[in-house]
Image (cartoon, rainbow, N blue to C red):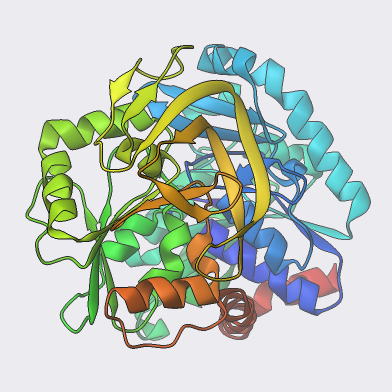
Length: 469
C-alpha cells in the first residue's frame, strides 16, 4: 500500500507504475483504492463508474477495470455536497447521509471489495487518499490506515520532495500514527526528486534514527503523458507560442473528465488553454465546453462572468464551438429540471437546437456510435440528461449521441478525441497540419516506459525487500 504525506504526492502515478511492472513479470496484480473524491470518472465494460486513476491502473495491470477496485467515489457537485457512487452506481440514500455518519454504511462495502480482490489476485496494489495523518478524520477513516490494517499491507509512505520539507513531512506523518499503524510502515519514498542525490546528505539516516524505517526509494521527477488527477494544472503549464491551432477549454466550476482531452493536449502544434474567467476569445480556433457534474451551476458561472457572451460572439464569427455532455446541454435552447436534481429550469446559450431534460436515472455505459462523416467511434456515456434535437440540429453521431449545427457540435460521447481518425478530422478542420497516432497504443507504451524508469531508478530497495520476504 502506498500512502502520501500530502495529496498530489504521486501515489497514483507510482501505483500505476507498480501495477504495470508486476503485470509484466507475469504476476496477477490488481489496483485498489477504497474511496476517492474526483469528478474525473470512467465507465467500466459492465457499465459501472469508477475514478480515472484506478481505471488507468487496471489497464496498467492488463486487466479489465471493475467497480470493486474503487468501491466508493465522491463526485463534488456543490461547495458542501458530493454525489456518492457505491460500487459503480449512484446511491441517493448515502448521498443524503451526513459525512460523518457514512462510515458504518460504507465500511462493509470497502472491506468486502478488498477481500474479494485479495482472493482473486496474487498481489493487490493499494492506494491511500490524502494523508493518514489527518487526525481529525481518523474516526471516519475507510481509506487509509483502516484499510492497511484490514489487509495486513506493507505500507510505503510517499513524500513529494519537490515541494520541500519532505523529511519533516515523513517524520511528522509517522509520529501522528498509532503504534500498530507505525508497525505497518515498511519504507519511506522520496518522490519527484530533481538534481544530485548528494544534496540529500544524511537525511535518510537521520530519518531512520528517528523512526526505525528505511528510505527505500528515491524516485526522480519523471515527465509523462499519463492522466493527471488535476489535468487543468498541467494544461496551464504548456505554452501556446508555437501552436498551429489554439483551443480554449472552459474550466468552469464542477467541470469533469478533463483527462479526456489529453489526446489534444499532447499533440504537437496544438495548444489547449484553460479559460476560467472572462477574456476575449478572438484568438482561438475552437472553444470546448467540457462535461460538468452540475450543469446549471457551470452555466450560471458562464453567464455571471461574461464568458457566455464571449462564446456567443465567437460562435457568430464562425469559431468552432464543441460541447461534450454537460457542455453540449449548455449549448442548447433549454435545460429542464423537473425533478430538481440541480438548480431548476434554465435557458441555455441557444447555439444548438436541442432541449435537455434532467432525469433521476443516470446513464453509464460504454458505446460505439457511427460518426456521420466517417466510420465508427468509441467512448462512454455518463449523464442524467435526455436530449431531443430540433430541426436545425443535424445528427453528428448516431443513436442520439451527437448533433451539429453549422460550426456548433455537441455530443454525449466522452473520450471521443481518443479516436484517431476523428481527432485527425477535427484538428485538420481547424487548420492543423499534423498526423494523429493511436492514443491507446501510445498510452500502453507510456505505461511500459514509466514502469521501467520507476523500477530502474527508484524502487530497487522495495523489490529486494519483497524478494527477501
